[in-house]
Length: 202
Image (tube, rainbow, N blue to C red):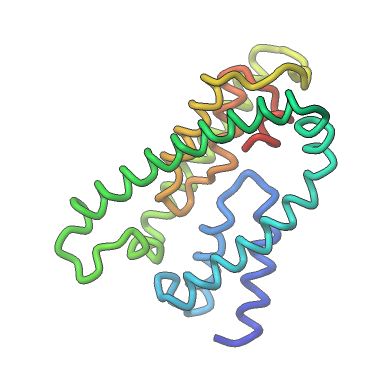
């Protein structure tokens, strides 16, 4: 793999990361266009490294907002920490369960039988991208149909809402294309969380 390919994939990842779309799916599509194998170990490692880099970029981008909202007091930090633990635990449980079901059913009998084997199949990525897009449209159209001004960024995300957002994260986790940020922000809006707070939480 050439440095040119790495450069192109890094640009795609960076452009997609702060949008409510699946950055990993767009990287996979770009890899296909460049003639690379997204399911190969080197490509998997590169994808992990690209996500690591953008994780630090996201932390830098949101740090001032996080500090003002979640680190303003010990109580505020404790409240968000509890919700993050709940959401993350539910994400892990649901995501891992779906992965095991897919590997034991749809991938049963294949040489490696791992969820990563699906990452190179654009026929699976395309409907996942479409499904995430539909969810985003539903959330946006519902907000517009209700004719309300944007919800004020006040109040805390409830434990129940944190659990629901975590569950949606878990449903998205095994699938390239089903944007976790887009799906969870949209879900947050549908259950009454303000968009800015949903963005920071997700």
